[in-house]
Image (cartoon, rainbow over the protein chains, first blue to last red):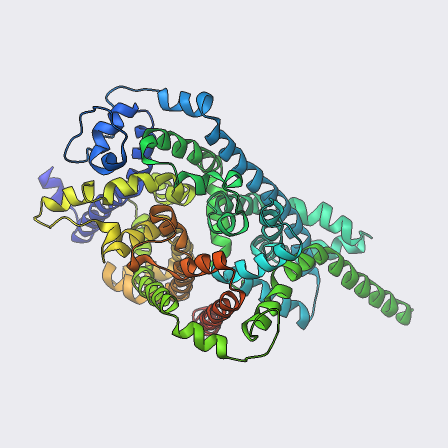
Length: 304
Length: 297
């Protein structure tokens, strides 16, 4: 083995050393990246007693009575002592609160994803086909709008919602979400890459705008649509700012906001709820990782 | 015959134009109604005394907001956070991309691992982050082994460290993909020539890769800066609406102003922030025009 190693050219040896160092670094990074996720999932299979025993030092002050063994330190356990489904049983069957909040999230996010994409498909086609200076200016303002943080966009959103008297209703979240320019931007960038000869050929064959849109552009954009859908979905599934300002009634809040308000007596439950909340995103990721990566790549370089 | 063709072409052009507007209409109406139109109202509100009297005071509101202690604190914290988080986000994600660009074992698995945080809602992991960074938590435990004194991270001046960790956790994967795409676009022949001329990997890295990546580096830098302004979510979920001073960000200022419904203050703050953003975005565009061409040539 040693002989083999030294018989390698110096260059090859250096490369191997580099790969070795990078592999170790990658393992460290992967460990740091995955630890919070894995711990949350495994902890959701612990009973409340075990949670209290492990994390008593953190949450003990607000714990109600109960004589449990509380250790001085926090013990992060990757594997529960006893696998218990009790938290899930409580979440799914005994306390409907969490399921209602989960349902709120679904109801808030799904229409936004579907309709933002639908509106954006039309708009992207419009931007691809339109010509002239005005179009450039409008598209440019879409980009600026897309890059604005919520601190800026929520004030106009709030004003309009107030005029339309839709504050405290789901419409206050849905409508600005559907109008959001993000999907328009990405789909336009993609559609512009469709060779114009395709469209010209169809025009010569007498196809109208609707037919070109329906028969050429939409089918060619299919993979991009998946990518954009994933990006829009995770953005809104994770939303916190909009419901805090536009929905005063905590009953209507999505699970993302509610999770931070679960009181410390129910930490075990919180882990189970947090895990359930991760599942849709992780499932989408499992089936659509390549689409996600493509979607991000379309964004490289703002103007495109 | 010729004329006929021309007018037909014109007709088709006009049809295309009308068609394009028709396709754009739903989106234009939405953007106009929910963003552009009210934004003009925001500008108006920022310059009047109060909505009832509607008296113009020009820049008085701006002076008031700029003097406001909470706004100053929020602005300072946000800037401080951005200027620490941004370079870290760029350097670390570039490192990740370069690692995955080499032939390390299980490459595609590592890519998946690095991307996973992007798909996990922050709300799902705040509990475990609280456990890790609590006074009695795991991070203190770990650091204690090296003789570092315990701190209650989220309630100390180091509170931003926790948020920077979460920011990087969430954003590195995304930036990494952008860098990977940049690395892939470097012409292979160039690397081969460099290799044949006995350039070492350090030279290849600095003289070829970094040069070709410069537009991507710039893009990721500004994207990270923009994203760092959005970091309210993590803080709110970890600490609620009124965090430790070091974590009081501009979005907290906005949220708390929303509660008192002070339209003047809200509008003025929004305008100030949009100005800052437009400047940053402007730099992005100018720089992209310049550097983008440099590499293509």
